[in-house]
Length: 365
Image (cartoon, rainbow, N blue to C red; front, side):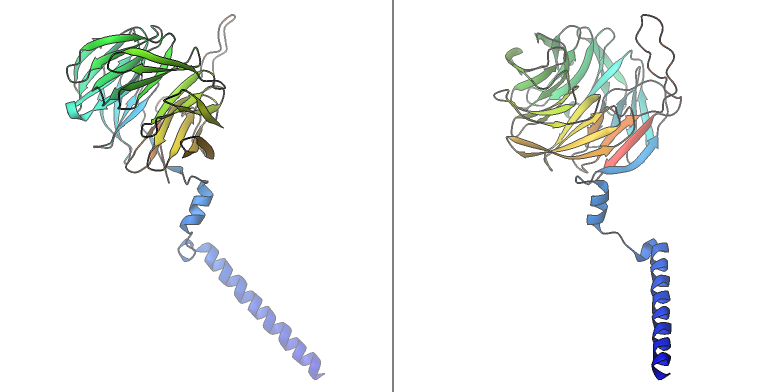
C-alpha cells in the first residue's frame, strides 16, 4: 500500500514538471524577444553568403529598364527607364529626381571628379551628358549605332561605349565630352570593363569572345575565345589580380585571366544573365539573372572560383549594382500581366508590365 502511495505521488510530480516545461516552451515560442536568433543562425537561414532581401521599394514610373549605377559618394542610384533616368535613394526607396528627353536608354556612367554623368542611348547611337548636381542635360554626343553598355576608365579619363550593331567601342574624353575615336572590335559588344592600367576588356556576345584593347591607343591587343561560355553578357573585373568575370547565356559565369585570356574556371548560374559585379572586399563575384536569382561565387585564388550561394530575388531582376561601402546589392524588376498571343510567323511578344509596379530590391548580408 505504501509503495503504491509513493508511486502515485511520483507520477503526480512528474506530471506537474512536464506541464511546467510545456508552459515555459509555449511562452518562449510566443515571445520573439525572449528567444534571440544568433548571427550565425541568421546567416545559415540566408545562405552561405549571408545575402538576403532586406527591402523592396515600389518606385512606379513609366518605361522598361536596363542598367543601374550607384554613385558611391552620395549613395544615389541612377536607374535607366527607357526614355529617361530615375535618380533614387536606395535606403529610403524615394525618387530624388529624373533626367528625361532620351530615346532608348541603356547604361549610365558617373564621373564625380568632373561633376558629370553619361548615359548611352541606343536610338540611333549617342551619349547624353548631364550635370551630377542639377541633373540637367548638358550635351548629346553622337557615337555609333546601337550604343549600349558604357563605363568610365579612370586610367585614361575616358568614357567607353559598346556599340552593338556597329561592332565598335567609342572613346569620349570625360572632361570635354568630345569623341576621341572608335575601335573596331570584330563582333557585337555587350559590356566593357577597364583595369585602370591602360586596358579595356569587351565581351562579344555574337562570337562568344573577349577582346582586350589598348585604352589609350584605341587598338585591339588580343581576342580570346571564351568556351565553354556562350553568348557572354555581363562583365565584372578584379583589377588588382587582372581577372574578369563573364556572365554567359548558357548558364555559366566564367573567370578569365586578363593577361592570357585563359578561362580559369566556371560556376553555374541562372537563366538570362545581364549583369555581373565583383566585390574586392570579400572576393565575391555576382551574376544577376532574369529568372529571379543572384548567384554568388568566390574568387578563392587567382586561379580558382567556387560557387557559394544562390539568392532568390524576383522574376525579371536581370540587372544589378553593388555598393562597395555597405556591400549591399541592388536590383530592379516589375510585375507582369499575361503575354499577348503570338501572331503567325512572329516571335511571341513579351508580357506587359503592370503600371506602377516597378520595384527596387535591396539585398544585404
